[in-house]
Length: 420
Image (cartoon, rainbow, N blue to C red):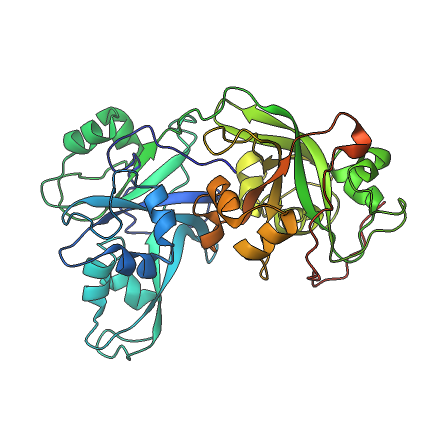
């Protein structure tokens, strides 16, 4: 799965405007946003990892300047990754859970533990406890505003950082650190005083081009949900039934596929916009479809509802029947710095029962090798897809699959009847 690499060496470039009044509706959501966390004296990555619900390896992946996980410099900033969601269908944000410790106050939690990414007022607004009586061991909702961009300003920037202002900040200093023009930065934060010493701004960041070419063949691990058929999977993946069966010799015929197993779906892995490796399937919307149904059921979590909304012009609340939507699935063509022995990769959506060891055993590869191809991913509940290696491709269609596909005996809850 591709990784976003920010062009900036500074705490990645994205500044958000201060949301004193939340937006009435969300224009779109996004799989990834960043929070600029000011490291206060006495804290460490273990605490920050717990507060942000990110693994330490995941945090390190977004902060290559941290060379020692056991020691981070106080009064610097680090980037925390999270999804940018639509909160109560009203505004973009992310909700972190925080367990109250003895002596905690909303001020301490907001201003110190979450480094002013939220406020005491927001903590009181989104929790049922008054500021004067926050019980020990209560789990609080810590709501942090975020942004997925503004196409009316620019379509070039796809990753945004929620950046709490501090005394000494200015429009010029932040723009210089982020390698942006002051006009562009102000455009993403209209009316904001960057010298106010408090409040939030959003910094836009470009993604570094991470691919120059793709590969002719990748596979998607499709979890067979109850009620589907080989013909349905072939149709949504734009494969013929015969082609699909050729990659899955355990399927006896086109009329039967066992629910709760996985099958391999072949596709080309392309360089999308010079930015990331993926394949774009097309899906014709039918009555009653939602982005969640399309992503989680019809495409078996190979994509997400947020990515569907990001890749299409239709809002989640209004997807017209018969519209053709782009379904973007991430893929991999390998990493020569890890190994040159593998030439075929499987995009594998994680499920609740999966672990590094169980997947490595099922794929007949070493756990260390699998982790090397998926840095942080197998330790992060936020990441939903990983790449599994398969040994050298064979010369003919019939023997392209060098081992039996993975099987996960976990039933999808609903009994849906796909159209044929």
